[in-house]
Length: 246
Ligand SMILES: NC(=O)c1ccc[n+]([C@@H]2O[C@H](COP(=O)([O-])OP(=O)(O)OC[C@H]3O[C@@H](n4cnc5c(N)ncnc54)[C@H](OP(=O)(O)O)[C@@H]3O)[C@@H](O)[C@H]2O)c1
Image (cartoon, rainbow, N blue to C red; front, side, top):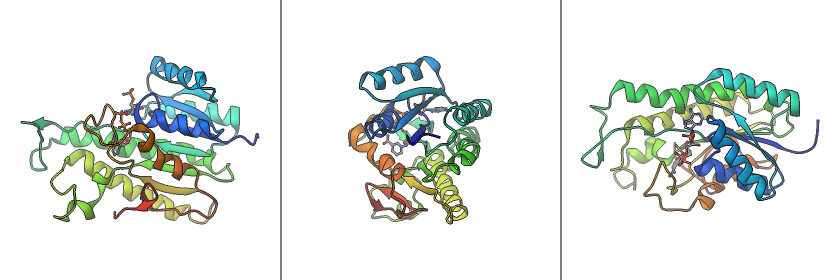
């Protein structure tokens, strides 16, 4: 198949995912703009194309396995491989009371389950669907959008900036995702595929209206991990080139 690199980014219609698609497109990579809503996905595609980028919407609802299979079939038939998978889509649905997140003793199982379905179980399902195509690339890269809030080391350190910032279902779904990244990296360590977890920073998006850094910087870690060289690392938790504690 062709030399051009193919990247699939989930949840690429807005936020960090959209900016990641923009930056990867700027490197001459063909970006498949994963979105669960056709209208929003096509709008993102046309915004990227207007910037001269090679972008194409692809229907992908993380919570709908049929869309995973259809997307994989389309990619197989049209490109024969996938070079980069960025598991970017995610949700933060913890409830708030008096401006503070509901804490661990009272977070409902429903909130835990819904959060884990999208951020953990169904993200694993997406990844498993695309691994055969990533194995057909000579430089497969898998990026998991984690969060510093998934770090148990930071959460248990009273001196850490996140010590008093606990959003139980969201945080722990990212801790679990980190665990999956480590296990998958181990399994694939003797292949060209590199698997890493990204902390994008506290980025201004719909999910994080009080974020501190702009989208451009927030997408950088995903882009770096998606384009690691052949001798780059695997199985790490990274923010802007620095390793974070699990
Ligand atoms: N912003 C931050 O400060 C920050 C910090 C640490 C980690 N992160 C992580 O970075 C990733 C991107 O966050 P963001 O801030 O860009 O969030 P965002 O602005 O809320 O965007 C989330 C994206 O995920 C998509 N999405 C959600 N559920 C989906 C599903 N079931 N199937 C397909 N797409 C789905 C959304 O699509 P719709 O438009 O259809 O809803 C949207 O495109 C997330 O994994 C988040 O946890 C963000």
